[in-house]
Length: 258
Image 1 (cartoon, helix red, strand yellow):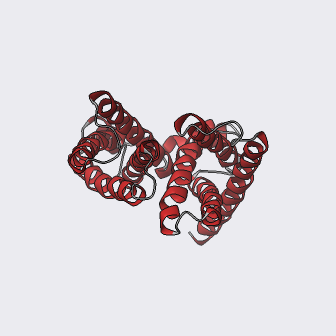
Image 2: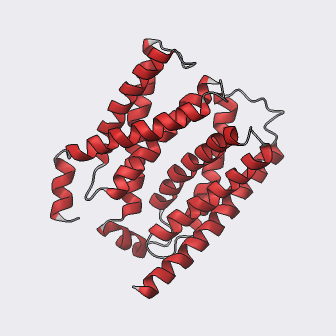
Image 3: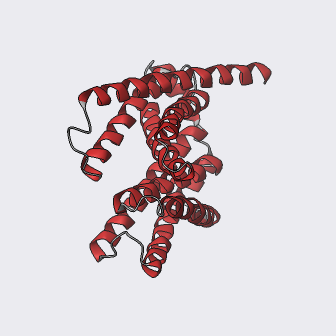
């Protein structure tokens, strides 16, 4: 890692903290207030809002020079405090007990950190190329794909559903496209050939979606049939792999032109 990057990792870059706050208020706020009128479930509203913290952290981590995970995390904490204040004033569906507020604050901080980490990985560092050359299958890119894939799954489905009056066909298409986009991002931004990693990440993202449906929204076993689960895993694997293949092809074309 360069000297500049090292300095930035030990000293707080407040301009990026401010950038994280501004971006977070726009992304998290817009995500929440788009979804809230259609989905009155506090669990869905909270999840979409928290996923906004992942996107915000990823943007800051990716576009800022050096390592700015700390800045994304601090910014996320400030955004959550502001959002909790706005939700309290507007008396929205999410409960406002001290325990809930504290848990949301911790989750906002955690999700911002995770997004910042994923953004840094997508930005690339000196270890990335060496990491890929050292071993054929790299789990850090699986984790990156899981973060990106889960966030895009949630945002593509829940943000597009209100615009199309919760048309299930549109929601399904958005769900499929989110895997292709995830695979493309990881395949394009990762060094070397990275096709299997996003495919595995797609399957894990489906598992996270299933856990949220079962334990977050209380879907019954009859609704979450085994056949649906198996189909979801297959979809996550194949569509993410297809996206990764497209990303690798695009990466090759860019490298040829360079």
